[in-house]
Length: 252
Image (cartoon, rainbow, N blue to C red; front, side, top):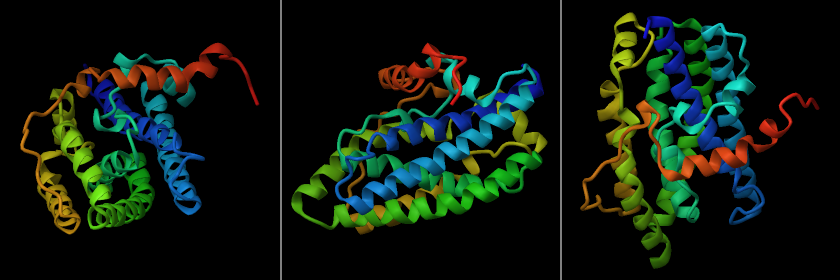
């Protein structure tokens, strides 16, 4: 893999994670616990899909094969997606959604800060713009973590159950391959290990306020950097890509 291909795949990783997580959040549209939160989650989903769109446009230009952002979003299969395993996990209940989003937001918050200094000027500009949105997302989900964790006995139990299950996907957030490490040397990519301690500090602060215990099971899933995913991604893509694949030349 040459540097341009590695660069393309790195941008795809960022775009795919936002696209998949944005789609997961959009599944709550019309089903939120109350109207204001329904709208809030829909707006966060739109932010993430907007970020994915910009990143996919950038990736398409880097690839230089005439593909568009729509081609990259709708015409790849699951083994060609590099989103984090955490982002594709299902909306079991509201607590699962909040934990999944909080863990992702905390990671993105620190990642985007580093990406603002990327040698890829387009990526750096997108990180500056996206970072403002992510800061709001993190405040929103952190507040919900505290509210659910310090709420009723049931809300705390549901939050702890979600935390126990989703924690097993957090190591994958920091996964890097050889190509990513080469991009770190050129100043394009971020060494994820350099943000891990800041991410963990953010997470532990909210954990304490939400009265959460660290899961006893330390097993961690991996594989997203090689296009290996959980069973959930295939079903998500089947729904998300159906219309475009059925009518690929359709225009509004």
